[in-house]
Image (cartoon, rainbow, N blue to C red; front, side):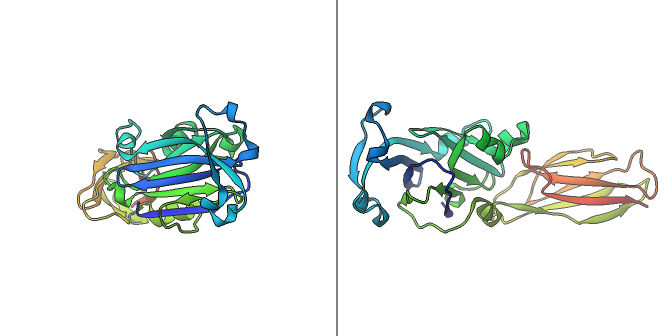
Length: 261
């Protein structure tokens, strides 16, 4: 992982996470205070531990560890929703983890947002950020939200950043001219570049327009750039349209205003 970040959130469930990272993925377990869980409610026998062995903040407290779950990067990469600009969330309840899913795909289809998730009682403390589908796993990132009374236990350094600050730090952006002009009988070219990508990383970019015509609406980048053609069909002199660019499931990262002259 290139970057691991974490913040505290009072709204989360009363348990903590123990994460063991390696080159191929990570294993995560939940832990709770022993007097806050009934062993008969667990699907497996919990492991009793002294809290101080997990974190100095838990000194003199008795804890139980349970729901040890393995998450392999290769399994995520084989999923049909694996994509550029992906954020893989792992839902959880009080006693176990769910399966990872690409939150970007979920939200683009349903228009759901984090307020809706909280109303539905869904919690996803762990999120894996995949900048591009071509990005090596070593350059992925992870964000973990933690209950303030249950410190994160992890075999890696952690930066104190929120999810959206982490997204800004590691996820790619796009750049393109903010405005161009084109004659009514000509074709304009719009060059789009990927920023914050490593050498050799490429992606498929998507375009959509509020008017006119784009002969191609999806182009694979070469050297992290793609050039789209725009034809002002049906437009009159003085009219303007907006052409937006993004990834398959994360649109509108950059845009150009095209004015017909």
